[in-house]
Image 1 (cartoon, rainbow, N blue to C red):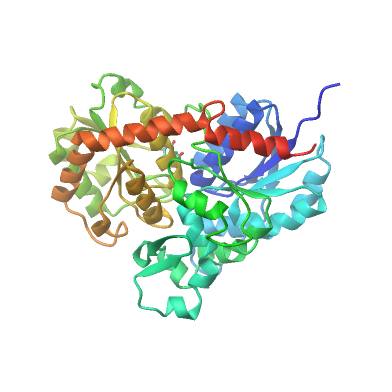
Image 2 (image 1 turned 135 degrees about the vertical axis):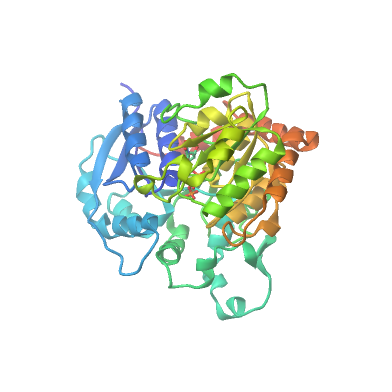
Length: 454
Ligand code: BUP
């Protein structure tokens, strides 16, 4: 008879930055012949998420879909809609056990988003199966989170120090810490993080979309117990492979016409918008750099609300002046396809972690322009690994207006500096090596799967 295969349930939370790695891991597990159930929170927050989920199941019919209906939650404070959605999901989790306890074959493990860990562990315990966290950002950010309970201790938070010491690792600059974390209790982001971090030590392992070469110091310090004793194993399995979903507006025909490495790609992720003044300065900076560009522009945080036309964000003269040199796209593009396109030679990025890993996989030099959340800490990783540049003085996005001259100069550097290009190319080589058969990340994933007992 056939040996029994593990059956893993995956549960992502709201936001493309969270959904994307879960879909990719689901597809990877299915390719190892694991039975996979993807729990999909309903309703989703954005159209991008629901469209992506629908396309995903269309090309992965072997993956089971389990819709999980979330009880609406109206936050009493005006919070980021993404974090309200996380809160609503957490408040609905008592409904999960009956749904998953009767699955056939029975579940052998749950891969949970970190934002659900505390409520997920008792559910998995009742089923007598392990919980793994699939962590959606950098190991470096995890080191800050591991240290979070100390961060809010009076000695640290009252200290004037500009640096936060992380045991076993380099200090983290206070200016890189997401401001809400320094004011505990004031936002859903902080309270979700605080209530889940203490559960980390109870999970079987933390799967990470990163790879040994990229964050070796941090991964090693964790796994030697230097950051915190009793922390579960850190399991780097990245860069997790793209799923091959093709969707959205397609600038590829235009890209196909451009010379190799001649185009700078600009995107600040799925949940970030910039001020109109900054958008204008960025446009002028692109123009000044003299390079061709492909710019994905968003005017709003949640796509459903994003109705503004290009003409309202950029002047007609800009669009006219640059029409032979660049294109500006509003709406969803297939970033996976863009970053692996031979015409793309640089990436101006907010440093959402998925974007960083996608750039790493293809060795595309990055100009880091972090705007909020984990992004400054991710930018530090980008700089240190050799994948790109980070201009710290630019601060958090939106804090001050960065002028077109500075922007144009930095874009020229990522597009023209041969040393930077060679370093980024090398990162790409190491990234692909990690995910090949018997590469570092591939071996870690295979070991996790083999450790599960159906
Ligand atoms: Br925008 C956009 N097409 O048009 P991050 C994004 N993506 O494929 P975020 C597209 O969404 P957080 C688009 O390739 C990446 O996989 C992109 O995740 C894809 O940033 C994902 O880079 C976006 O982690 O999330 O969404 O801002 O802030 O939570 O990290």
